Length: 314
Image 1 (cartoon, one colour):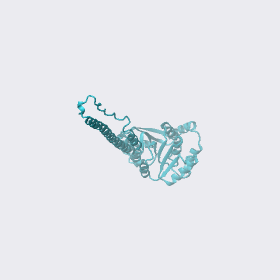
Image 2 (cartoon, rainbow, N blue to C red):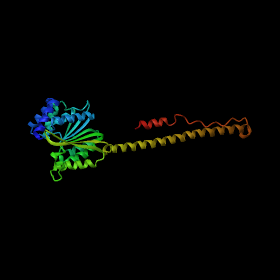
Image 3 (cartoon, rainbow, N blue to C red):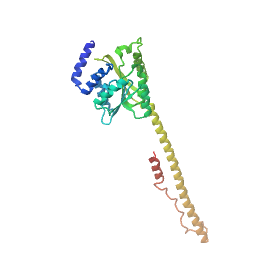
Image 4 (cartoon, helix red, strand yellow):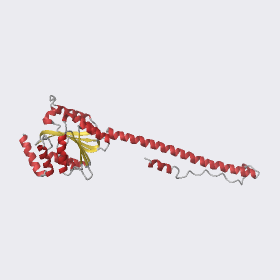
């Protein structure tokens, strides 16, 4: 098999399963006209991204590497009503083309495009704490993929799907003698992935109109990211403090109730003694003396109002 055959098969599948679409076709056409490099995903790969996002039920998607917005359109169209997509792009010319393509596709209000180096905009997203993403697509500078992936984990939750494109590099990923920065980046990424116990992942080789390459699918299987984990710890501390305060309130209420109860007993005993004295006999000498009053039962609703106020305050 060779490149011509791979391209022919891609065209055959595209003709059957990916019908013409003015917004998508226009995005490719205008990207070429604007001089952007022809490195967008193929139509069949774009359809795959769309299907994965739909199967994931993604409501919040992050894309690292916008280019002309072709893959962005595929992903954004998979969102349900109210869904959002954030895409990061470093090149102003790419971002301008992408914005125009997204507007033509009717997605300008759905997609937020952030301009700047991803290693600067990703920490901003983390600091903003706007939410954890359901699906993350990394298709940017291959040499920095390990760093992008590490940041992506901080924006993930259990069940987040992370897709990383162009990780086989025409087979060079398996060549230890290759020192190309992009190849070294994807090799470091795979080594990082192998050591990362919070995800389950695989890499698939692909051939097609874009040549011989591949992509990685990684699924987050634990809630151990700093952003969500730290918040969970903070919530646990607040809950523990609330429980301690509630226990103190209950103890104080119990003491008050017991003091009242024993106060009633003491008052009754004193009244009985005074009455007996006035009648000229000691209380223990009178068989007709009234019995000692019972200690009143603790009210059934004691402490409830304080408990209600404690829970309502959080």
